[in-house]
Image 1 (cartoon, helix red, strand yellow):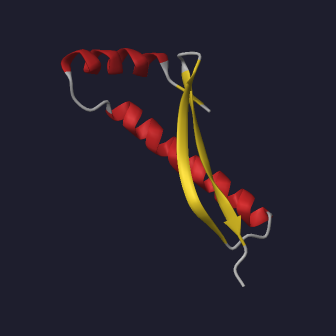
Image 2 (cartoon, rainbow, N blue to C red):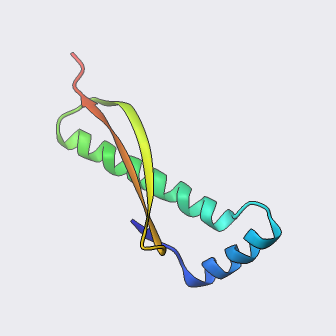
Length: 79
C-alpha cells in the first residue's frame, strides 16, 4: 500500500485540469508494481518454487488517499 504526497496531489490535480500525463502518479504506480512483483517472487522462492505462472496485478483505492497494488500468481516447482 502506498500513500500519495499532498504536494504531488496538488500538482497532479492541476495536470488533470489541463490534460496530459500525470507523470508523478505514473512513476508511483510503476514503482508500486515493481515492489509488489519483487515481494511475490521472494515469497514464492521462500516456498521453494522455481517460477511463478499466471501472474496478474490488481489495484484498488484505499480511503481516497492511498492505493494498494497486488501481484499474484501460482508458484510452481519445476521437475
